[in-house]
Length: 152
Image (cartoon, rainbow, N blue to C red; front, side):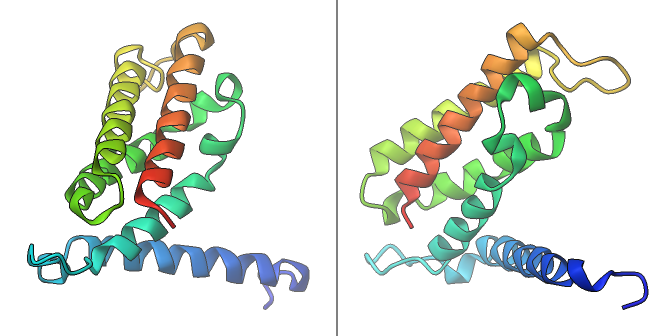
């Protein structure tokens, strides 16, 4: 307790809980035996995917104005990019596979534009807000659509 002030303890506990949920989701989403066997049974990885998407959706890069936050979103972009294949793998388990595929395609496109516009280059200044802001806004919108398609 000496390094954590008592007033910050609930916040630290909440952050740890979210981190554990995300890590649990990551571990489950890579377990092939947990997926449905194609017999129409629900996939055990769908809840993990929902947890992961919910966590990503709380990131400031998903909630703050894109034109202002984009230079600080390298980790967020990687997280979004990495969750798309898991979402596509669960397409057969959701109410509208077409909506999930469309949202995944939108996210992939936004990530590609964000990368091509050098919005978070290594050892260089970020790309211009005129390009990168709309790229991140498109990614934010695609992520919201992906969350909706996967369901709660």
